[in-house]
Amino acid sequence: MIEEEFLVACPNLEDEIRGKWVLNFGSGCTGALRSFTGAALKIEMDPLIDRYVNDEFATVRRTENTILLKGYGERIPVSDQCIDVIVSCNSLDHVDSLEDSAKEIDRVLKPGGILVLVVDVKAYKTACEPSPIENAETIRDLFPGFQMEHDEIKDIPKYEEFLTSETTERPTLYCRLRK
Image (cartoon, rainbow, N blue to C red; front, side, top):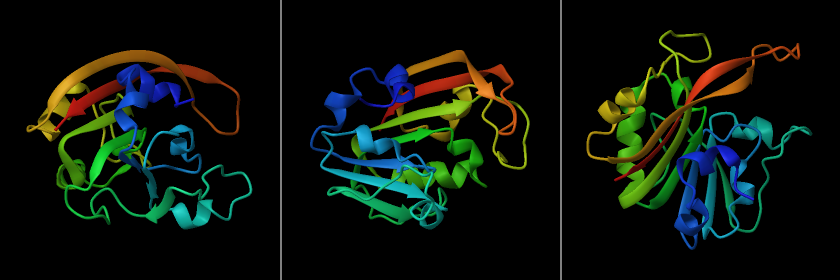
């Protein structure tokens, strides 16, 4: 079962990834691509990936067609135009430079490729999220050569603190773009 967050922006994602190369931009410790069973190659990319593979609580794992890749949004360590689909859940706002990361995404994504983004919407920087994304226009401006096929903002519960069970609703932007 593909992660629900990605299906909001791209309901037919399972068909879109079949036989394709898929990059998870900022995989974190969960490795969301484990559920992308139809993909030919799955690349879980994160700057902390080497930590996650040794963490007993992390669920990101190497499998037959999965590569765990240490990489940064501003310098994605793959060849030009080799990726068919890029997915990113709550990662793009964690990069140091939105503009450089957008250029890298454009560089590695094949023409006609799909970019599926899920990002928290906010107008302010935080220590962990130095690149705020205020709305879909921010995304359109970052990817001028891409066609926005879907954009939707939903309020979803977010944990404010890892140490408490208190939740608040925070607007989240779901986008699907095609290069």
